Image (cartoon, rainbow, N blue to C red; front, side, top):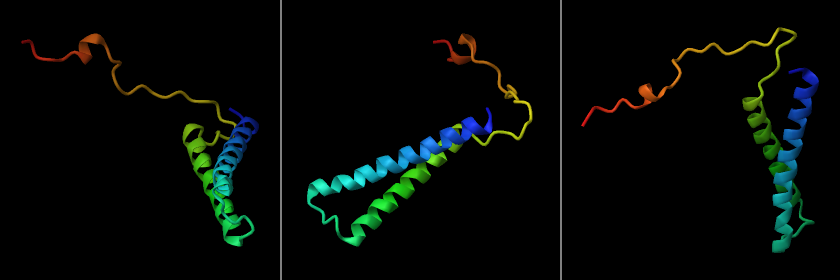
Length: 93
């Protein structure tokens, strides 16, 4: 994975989370909330910021920062693979 693709995905996650959260907060307009009150827009901004942060954290968990030019590594297998015999270890009846 390169930096350009990673940044593109990260930006999309932040924008998507922000837009979703802000859209939910703006949905309060249908409930008759006064949209001209400054507190309303602070709530919308707060929802957008925290929505972006949570999506960014989820993206970082799924796609950690790419290495800086190093060759990609594969995970070393530390456990034995599951087989039908290893899963079915019930004592005989």
